[in-house]
Image 1 (cartoon, helix red, strand yellow):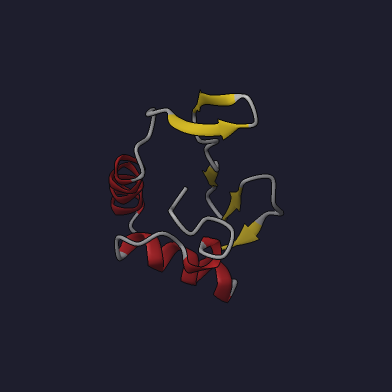
Image 2 (tube, one colour):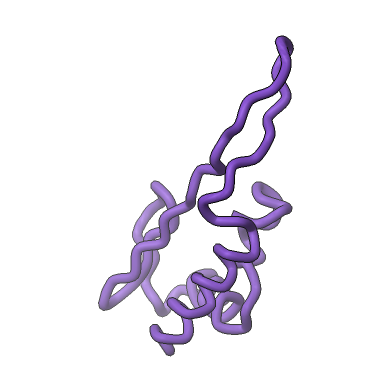
Length: 87
């Protein structure tokens, strides 16, 4: 696992979705600015935690796919149904 590549690609993906940029949220009374909520990814020596999820060891196939997606420069495919525009 290339942790430097993962961190570099996460920064690139964050900038792609506009990290730190507010978005317009329409409300019944008009609109307001809203910042997208980040989804934390915690890297450990022996696994990861995505958001508030469970610990996932690096040997688990879903964890390997998640990290491979990031190393390839893509958002993890497992997140696409919940975050179609990226997170």
